Every structure is written in structure tokens, then in C-alpha cells.
Length: 490
Image 1 (cartoon, rainbow, N blue to C red):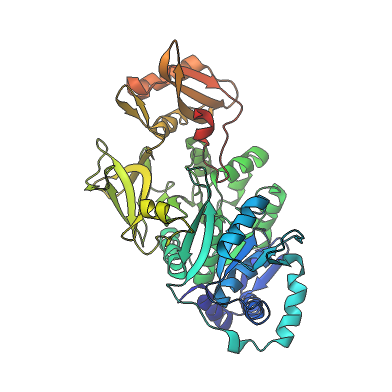
Image 2 (cartoon, helix red, strand yellow):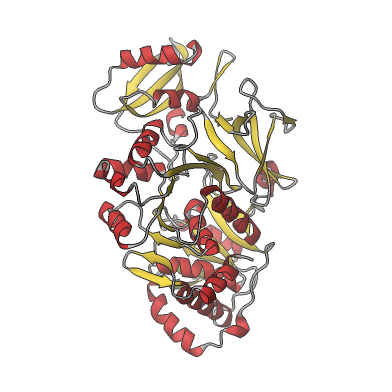
């Protein structure tokens, strides 16, 4: 069964159960299915959307966004998920590239002559009229697992935008990884704060639909009050909080989340590595909860999951491979190797989660996707107990006189120091001093750099110890919450 088939099933078996909530607005499974079915029918009958057509959505944290997303699938079309503020030129290029004829946007667009724009703010009113005038059943035709479902655009680490093509089968395989990895159940109710064009957030929505559980969508952490209101108003027992959201939550509300220790069963902190200081604070606030950090990508879904609250701390460990992911390791020529701590390799993944390719970029697809396997630039290895360790990215590894240094390994040690919030290790070239390591540190309160240097010398090999430590107010992050290394190494 696929996502929309599960939606129909739950609408029949649990029609009055809450499926989705956005602030004060919520819909049951029956209502959501009727809305989706109605809009999919309207798209086919009035907009003449056909199987395989591309339909564009500008992201918004609304009920309408989710209805449109599911209706696109049910209509047989392919959903192109874009940021709310995607540059006009990028939007126009994607519309031309895909010959899209329909754009859903929360605000009225008056500048695109090449495409019909549907304003989402009118959707609820229009759906009522649609449902009264359309014979729905004759238009319903569920997609197949091999049909294309989504194109999710990601900048990744290459700097340019890539459209990741995912089939309906890919979506369900990723959902299975999360269901088994998080031990999800029908009674779950999860708060999701990330943008719905981002793979990590939209996955939680369709995974909940497959399980038959509930999701509460918030507009980021722009209102901490709304976050805690949601925890009180709905039967919330799980959270999807990227590390950046956790940081904001703690800065604004301190340890208030600890008041919900007996309510929250699990929290997912994926999209970026969890800094050690935040990891410790989450464990302190929610000692009884399962706390997950996942490793994955838009290209291969969530392929490694780690409950860092209930598994003994292993430096560099990111967990065990997920249900539908088979990891292996290769050298720089693509040959399979037995990777180890002393001789790590590049991580590759085989399994039903893997993308179909990059939209309009066959060359890049051939580089990353070979024989159905996704090859990454992440360096890691597997230990004898089946745990995966991430050393760093191939492009990030620093080579000093033949000695290879993983910045993430050093940063993990740094961020265990009591007065460090976050850190970034970079390579610096100087005409007088030559090439050396520099550590940028965001301190908590006052920080004695000499004491930190002493700590590093005691915990790192000599060649990994930075020559210079500089305190900074903040470290820039990419849109997805990862440290923006390229900004500091230009």
C-alpha cells in the first residue's frame, strides 16, 4: 500500500481520529481524505492534470499545503516542493524545465504568464464547492510504487540546487525506516516545526499517515508560546526538533521542556549533527525519553538511527543501519572495502530508499547513483557490533603534511568542554606561519582559551590540536542547520 491508500484506509477505519493540526485548526482522517480526493479530482477535471505532470508548491506551514501535496500524488502528478521564498529566477527555471502548468502558492502570484497560479488562501472555501459539484469516485486512480512522487530541491554541500526525484516506493521505504527506528505507533502525536518543503519534515507527515497517527505542524520556533500550547492542547508524545530548534528552545525557555518528561516518549533531532552540549541538555531534560539523531539525505532517506539517550556514548557513532538500508564502504575508486577506524571508507547505501536520480542532470546522477546504490562523500566505518561511525565529509577532511584530520571528530571533543556551546575547526594558510589549524569557538559565558588548549592537548593527538583558538559570537549554518564550513574556508 502507498501513502494515499493508507489515508483512505484510516479514513474508513478511524474516520473521527485527528490526522493533522495546524495551530487551532485540525482535521480528522475522514475530512483529510475527502479534501485530498476532492482536490485531486478537481485538478484532473478542471486543470487537466495528467499522470506524470509536474505541479509546483511554494512551501507554507499550513493545512492547505499538506492537502495539496497529497492531492498531487492522488492525481498522478509529481509534487515539486520549493522553499517559500525561492528566488523568482529559480522558480521560473524550474517551471520551464519541467513544463509545469500549475503552481500552488499561499500568496497570489501575478507575474508568471507561463503557468496557472492557484492561491492556497482560497482553497478551503473552494473545496466545499468542489465536493458538491464533482463526481469523485470515477476520477480516483491510486499511483503505483514505481511512479514518480516528489522532486525535493536541496543545495547539499555542492552549493548548487539539485532536484532529487523520489518514487512512491521510495517514500514508503523511508517511512518504514522511521516507523521501525522510532518504534512508532497509532497513538503517537508528533510536533513538526521544520519547513514542509524539507525532506525531514514532509517525511514525518506521510509516515504518520501510513501509521495512522497524528501530526501537529508549527511554523518553526517563531513562537515558543505556540510550541508549549501545542503540547498542552493536543496529545503530543513525540517531537521532531532539529538541533537549531533545540538551541532556540533552550535559549528562550531554558529547561521548561523538562516539565514534559513524562509526556514525551521520543524526540528526533535529525537534519544536522547534534552538538555535544545540546545532546547533554536534552538527556538532562528528558531522561526517560528516547532521543534520536538520524543520518541520511534527500537522496537516500533516513538510513542510520541512533538513540543517544539509551545507548552508551560512542564517540563518532551515528547508530545502526535502518530497516530498508544496506550500508557498505568503498575507496575513492568505488571499490568495496572493509572499512575500519584505522582505514575508513566512503559510505554507500543500497536499498528501496534510494532516489531515482537528479532532475535534468544525468551526469551528476551517474556520479552519485550507480546500479541503484547511492554513493556519498561521507567517510565512515562499521564496528564489530554493527554500529556506524561518521568521520566526516571527504571535502572537509584537512590534510596537514600528509596527516588527515576530521574536523567533526575534533569538534565533538571540543564541544564536550563545559564552557563551549559550538565550535568549528578550519584550515588557515598564512605566508609567514604556513598552513595550520584554527578553532572557532562560541563560548558559554567566559572561556579561558589556555585552559581549553590544555584540555585539547590531553584529549587529542598532537597534530589535531589547533594552533589558534578564537572566540566568536556565532557560527553560521546552512538552511538545513548544518555548519557552513565553506563560508569559513573561502
